[in-house]
Image (cartoon, rainbow, N blue to C red; front, side, top):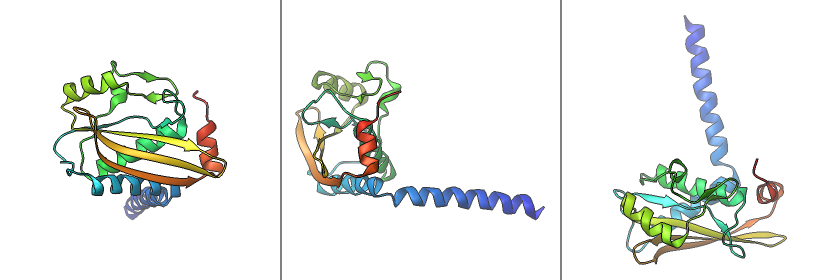
Length: 173
């Protein structure tokens, strides 16, 4: 009787340890810290009762292009907003959003207004990045779609390492 209970406890604790290891990952930590800063700096404060959407972060030099890194960073920031109690709308479940295989949710300005009306979205999380040989510079904003007013902005520099390089160069499958 104790063996199944002990096994179940080990499985639960093992899965918790994996989660903790993920949170300690430098790229995830940077994303979470950026999300926390965006929320802390927002003027006016972002209420938790109205939904938000997150768009794929794009290459600043090619605004219709992204990478696995851009898609992952947007996912991580959206995850942190959710953890903080904000209602995030999952765009990948909608047929009418401009979702391209390997590119993510690239929101065209005309679509942002339509989506915000359809879902009563109070704000959109957008981001762009620029890559140098040593650093990836990220600019992340919370934008009110009704008037394109930037409610919050945060900038980050991430070192280029093996992980970020792989995410930047990944091809969609």
